[in-house]
Length: 432
Image (cartoon, rainbow, N blue to C red):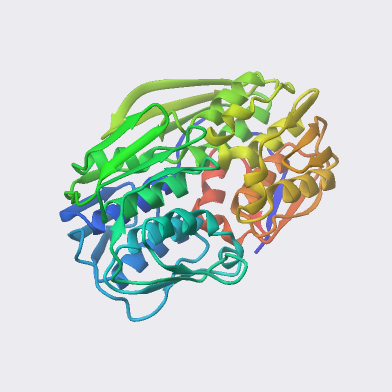
């Protein structure tokens, strides 16, 4: 499936985006091992999160969806999961793979986790190392990639783990395994990462201590079912923000978006480039900060990039590369080695896509220098990466001609209804 994007005149609008993917994953997993019923409202009905729900059903959890965005989970408690009949297929979701590994490392039965071709090529050593130290036994392919074969019936013990690389997925995997471990489990992170797992555990009556860069919990605590409201996904809202910023004069309000401070690096970076972005109507969904985001067309300029913001905007760099490409001057990104092992090598995919649209980009091992200019029309390849596809689609709205984006099937993993949503602000993105 391909996108054909026609240069578009974006308009003023009030719009919403689908639920937060990270929170939706965690709500299903933690709801499943909670005692009692959990109701999830605003669930992201995308392929990745549906794969997580299917995996929990295969583990014996009753999960119903009264509507596309409402999920009812009959929690089985910390020790109530059942052996699955076969391998658990997690599709394209690295989040599901890594967090499920932590959750399943302490079960009494063995499981095997696998995914699609892309996921089966992604490195898993970073979770295998700490989980093995806790007493788990996990086998991977010879190059450290899935499938993951997780042994059952092993006693886990709490550890302190100093993460060599900032990763919310690794931190979460260790904390979830820590629920099944004896004693305390703590994780020290070298830079701030998203803290949705800690916040949700607390909302489900699990005591989690956070001090400076260390997160600690004691094993054996059983979560309690609750109502979980999922805000709109800031990563998805970023593409609407990008399109608006690049437009001639649009003024767009994106309603009810999660603005967790461990996720708002993209806003800080864009403001540093001159973006007119404001948060309005601040409130909370449980322990998660939420706001409406007002964005106005802006004249962006290249700016010095602060590598300290990498972990606060790790999923938004495809959009930030496009913003830099449309800005006046030059932007140099560094500290982004993690982008080379996402759904694609995002640095290479974006550099190639932007060059094909007339932008000068010089790659480095952990980033790129992007020279601002005008987008030409042309044909680009998304490398089967949903965020690369959506970022290049927004570039197409202000290009000098039509832009054809190849291989966009995976957009549904994180942003179902993407084309319809961006059409709401006037973007002409069609299936080709």
